Amino acid sequence: MKSYLPYLQNFPDEPAETYNERRAAMLRQAIVDHPEDELQLLHQLIIFVAVTEHKDELPVLAERLLTLDTEKKFTADVFIILARYYNEKKETSKSIEYYLKTLDVSNDFEEAIIELGEVYEKSSDFDHALKIYEMLDNKNIEFGKEDRYRFQGNVYIQKKDFDSALECFKKALDIYPGDEDGWITDSIGRTYWHKKDFIEAMKWFKILLDKNPDSIDGHYGMGLCYQDLGDVYRAMHHYTEALKTKPDFAEVYNNIAALMINFEGEMKKGIEMLEKAIANASVETNISLFYLNLSRVYSKIADYDKADYYKTKYMESFGFDVDFETDDDGEEA
Image (cartoon, rainbow, N blue to C red; front, top):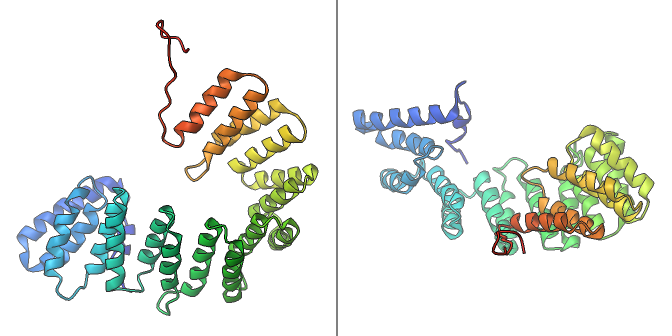
């Protein structure tokens, strides 16, 4: 499907916010000056308004464009912009409605398929996600068949249906046996790890390391397997190798902390590793786990103030407000 959105990526060398605002203002004036070009100008205006502080205008502008666009030239673009708008506002049902409208207009709109699938996944509506990802298997979508199995494999992981996940990932590998970036091979190894078949998992992680001895995923996967097998020395080796390439790998610090504490009894070093995990956590990182682990460690060494502090941080990471009761002097009870 031909989309008219990509040219937005070509911003000039100035703050995007400034450019978007100025461009939107110019387009508003152009519509007044050239009403004969309203459809094309309105389409461009909607695109720029979508990335400004005036997003709440989008439904009204979209309604006007949809009335004018009798040939449905820009309809799919407008529907996906509205879908993203409502998704950002956390109005999931309306977001889904507009993603589906997008796909009714164009069933090979790759971005709409993937984004709708992700919306379903976030809502834990895995069956609908699986069905939507089937739409990637379209001759008009480059690598669509392979991506279908990649995305469906991830959904099956979330469903804890590891056999179906393996089936999907292996189908993706059949389609793309080169697997230059190693993503499919790593996914197969991780799935065997989820199945607790650590020996089979290590075979796949070794394939990654044979292709690239510095593979972060290969070393991390091997570390996970050796850790679960109780081989502390080899687990530490692979985690250390992963950190050489990715020194901000938060999950590795968390796992090293577990080795230090559970196998070596090194509480202080374990705490240092957990603090590094928190310091290096990204937006995608499950930082809640790090807070919980720190709370547990401090409880073990009877530092209950810090244990309570990190338990509070753990709760706050899920969006809960935690207030301690206080006595009349304002001290914690």
